[in-house]
Image (cartoon, rainbow, N blue to C red):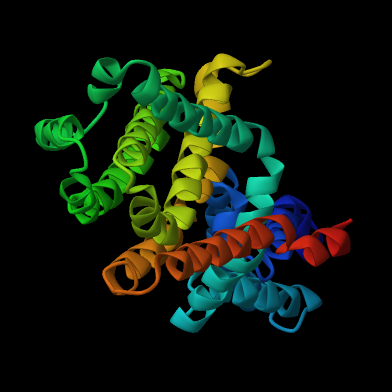
Length: 324
């Protein structure tokens, strides 16, 4: 086979591979999505085989030099070392993740609205219809809280249960985050249910402690880690709603294809929840139990919450401008 025919028969695969390498520069191969990543692997194997053929039949040609560089870059990108993987993780957290959240602001804000409205409803129910609100309290604590509410001035009995509620809410929030994301596969029904029930739980607890006169003590235990845990739940719910949107409004695509298209960003959106929950867990373990002034504890939570909002709103903006 003449070299011209050889190049003409294979250049499409080489060009696709070169294009994929350009798109993954500094971002990693996982940024391509499953379909394109599969194609990149196929083009890499094809190009490696072409390189071996060209080295045998056209050893001194520019084709060999071109394929050497192309295959070498592709091998380094596909089988990258640990430091490069760490660099990709840093890029994901510092640039890509906040951009994904902003690009899907609709589902994220809807999730946050559902959660916030449910918290407000649970709080108001305590004052409007306590027997109904009591149903949303953790089963193990209903009797204790109910009994304490019936005894005038028994504020210590209520305040004493606040640390138990705080630990319960932390574990519950992790479970709710997972459920809210996975619930997207039920066309969003289970996602909305998880957000509403968790919001009613937190709101009812807040109302109970308000009635008992221990509101400041309660919030001083909740706000420091809740300032990150509640946004984490909202983000997980937003990722679930991204999947639900693909199922409910697939456009011109079949639902399965629309879901496959939405899944990479939705999965990345929920992956970013993990560091938030880890930081919140650290705060819960080392700050919450300490006998620090309650106002100072809440101030720490406020700073953490504002830092998160700044991160989501500002991180990666310069990269977005550079890409335009």
